[in-house]
Amino acid sequence: MSIDFSKYKNDSTNPELPKEVTIFGPPGTGKTTTLIKIVEGSLAHHIQPWKIGFMSFSRKAATEAKTRALKAIEGVDSKDLTYFRTLHSLAFSWLGLSTSEVMSGRDYNELGKLVGLDFRTTQTLSMEEGPLFNVGAGGDKYMSLIQYARVKQVNLEEEFHKGWDRSLNKQQLLILDKAFKDYKRAKGKYDFIDMIEKFIFRGTSPEFDLLIIDEAQDLAPLQWKMVKEVLVPNSQKVFYAGDDDQAIYSWMGVEVDNFLNASETKVTLEQSYRVPEHPFVFAQGLTDQITKRENKSWNSTKEKGFVTWHNDILDIDMTEGEWLILTRTNYIANKVCNKLREEGYVFWREGEGWSVSVNVLVAIEVWLKLQRGAAVPADLLKPFSKLIDPKYITKSGRKLMFSLSEDQEYTLTDLKRLCGFDVNNFVTWQNVLKISEQVAAYIVSVRKRGEKILSADPRIRVSTIHRAKGGEADNVALLLDSTKACVESEDQDAEKRVWYVGVTRAKKELHIVVGSGKHSFGDLR
Image (cartoon, rainbow, N blue to C red; front, top):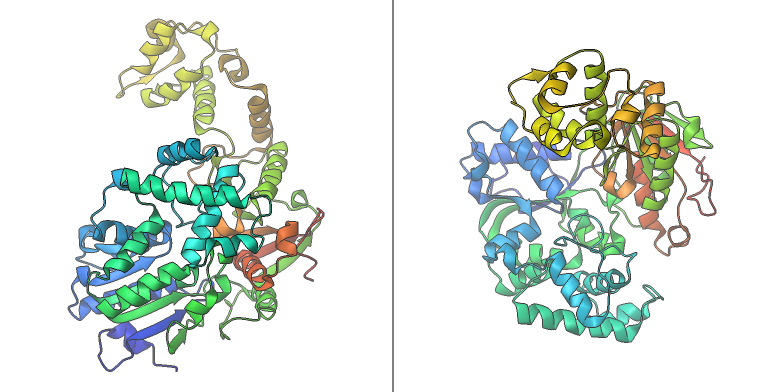
């Protein structure tokens, strides 16, 4: 069923319009902007802001939506948008839980000691973004399977016998499953899945005049149960927003059918404001190979853009412009980062940060200024003081430098007089600062390349495709190297979707690096 979507933008509360609508938002078509306009139109028709639910799969997306709503809508305060949050956050607050009742890294470590397993995590765990656990660790592998079965709502033993991970021992899995339940019961603890389950069991929720489920293609079966059985019955109008072609979390139990069948009324946002023509055509070639999808018609930008093929990431000239380098796995991302370091590129690694410590960069810049006789603000002297080689300053002198008046600037002469900084201005930063030879060599190569090492925004970003979802850049480099498990996966639809997400991050240029390893997504030309 198709509708005049402008009616929803103007007045989503109209009782003559269908209660539930699915909005398909292909890459760069302004899905979030559209949803904010719906919120704005609802407020204009006197819906109270606390009667609007804007639920997203990830904390990042929920925060972005709230920020954009506050900028776009006059007269609305942050505290008014009470229900701009994730489903887990809604369950947490509605159930009246406290943070002390949530399983923490310490709890998992205690549990691991009880069953003889090692959990690598050190923080509270969430399934909002990425895997529930680091599946590379022993104990985490077992817990991942337990959590996977729960969100997918399938029998744990049956899931084990499907060969989810043949390195796992069935007896150990069942021991952990029981111990996990017993631990939570004894300690009065909940994990994120418990919150959803308890929310569903209670069967009550806030009453919404408008409910938006963003990133709906990423919801696991248990989350869909929460939405359909509890939230929707307590809502007047419901929008499910997402893109089935970007449903890339099948390995977390996500089934795209739930999104495709969410409602009878469907709308597609047809104009992309990101993807140029040539990358668009390339992306269409990928979606044409996906067997289970909504057939959507959408358009590229007026820009041509282009797609270029390379044999190695270093064949691409990245000396200028904005770049996003995408890989299928963290292992391949690590290899890319090593190559970039060798070439003297400064970059940002998603989930890890800058390729070199900002404090180190600040310290180098401070010394270079002091060498020239310039004065340096006291706040910049704090990271500098921590890295000075002990042969040039005493412990008491380091403390004095750290505590200098913050409203003043200081020269090298000042620091010699006030802090006993015993060094001459001809000494190189490699000698003044106590940093490793490897880091020093990298910074030297960075300076030779002429890279800006203290820019506010990273010019080059390195990320896995999953972490980059929702992101974009003028220039995208996509490496086709993959893994045996991915290449031989029974769910090739899921793999096509992953690469589709990667291809559609480019706003101008798409550079594809052919696979150099044993396993590759293949030659797509």
